[in-house]
Length: 123
Image (cartoon, rainbow, N blue to C red):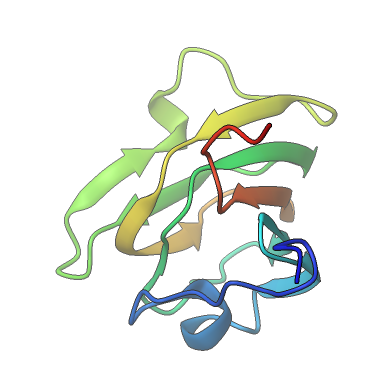
């Protein structure tokens, strides 16, 4: 069986689809990628969750947010970024351990994440 045909399931105990399904919708999954449609409305906060794979991120709409570790320590405050991504921007992000996110802006934060499960070269 080709690894494209079989989904390699997430193994992280805080996987986003298990811990924060109200904010992550699965669009596609196979043995190499998982595509998540991620939305967070103004004022909303996700439950603690994690992303075990690196991902290409495509911004559909931007809003300021704060990412916290499970104890509430700020990991990232987008308001301190030199430039905020515009809709249509693409970004790269590594795996993210357990965290939660709060939308502190006035718009929906809407990101498509293409998580790369298999980073080994194929021939």
